Image 1 (cartoon, rainbow, N blue to C red):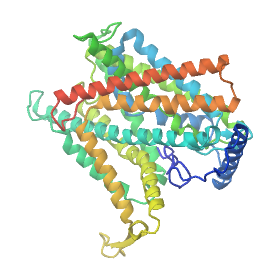
Image 2: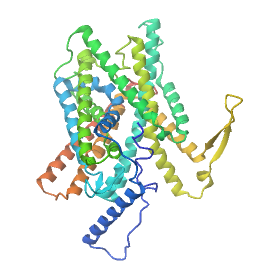
Image 3: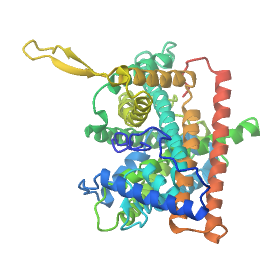
Length: 511
């Protein structure tokens, strides 16, 4: 989905390195009024400059329905594969309620964030083209670093999760075909996941060297088509499994375990998986920047958020509850790879291939902003180094002898930095090959800061809500509860990773 990151859409300071801002004179200590006035003027100048530099002249033709489709595409992803297991941990009562609760909180904070697209007025103010621009204008420079760290950590964690998910789907394709040929009793149908992670990493290494990959429009089309493909195939397989026995399996309290402590950790991990499935705040501003006006962009975006999250939640409830009814408390962590389905083998293969294709493109979309930030920071640190600025052109002969050779640009900095990042990401995925635990940790770390804290803080700053007012207390209470949920989900995810590290063999993918 090319609007995620938008070819560097998560940059922090328009190409400059972190922390490289002009400093104020320390000759005398300014009064708080002067500081506030200077900060306000700086934010206004920044907003106007970004509005002018970004051009604000690109033609926006987006409607509520195109924005809705973007939201659905951004939200629906590999997290749907864990929904049946998630509902199984929470039970028939709490599971659906938590899904609806996360949806409501996400919609409310998305509505707050939609009003921050323009500064200072939500209808007539200067445009903030990116999430980080809105944070800069409303909260100032200090919050930019925190927001940037949260965004890039979330992006990199997503790369780790995608590597694990893609490798488990590759293993599933081989295993399903092996069982189809040799029967379920075949003993050599469980290959190691590390080999497939290396293959996936090498393929990403090749793609990362292609020029302007983030501008390829078909990447979004393929990502949306494949994500919807494996999501609906998963729903169909679960419905068929449920129909085969006709019983509504599961319990009101969810899966039972021997120790209450383990039950608590599983519930916390399930919360992290749900948080991962609802994260899209960091691309909301970019989606809103595609909308035409009138009507006002914030009103259209609020409608699109409502429609998109409503459709997503209904689908999540259908898939999660259907999977739980089909498998009960034995629902697998990954509905497509956890020994759940073997027949029809061709349909299971298609679903897993859709997962792989989707993650191949999505990996690059999430990686592009990280690549750009690393290369920008290194270039700022050593601006005159030949290694950093050099570009070499290599002539590659074509397969057809009659065609002229193709010239390929090779930048040493790009080659080295991107190779190191992808190798490190692949190594971490090989060391922590645990699907549910890693997804839960990513969701827990990214949900509160990006989906709750910054939208609430910008809303308070925009409306100048005074500390101690009832509205202020209610907003802070909601933010605090979400913070506790994120911390608890992180604890559950880390505990599950530690437990799996003790029990699993190194470099062995866990479903």
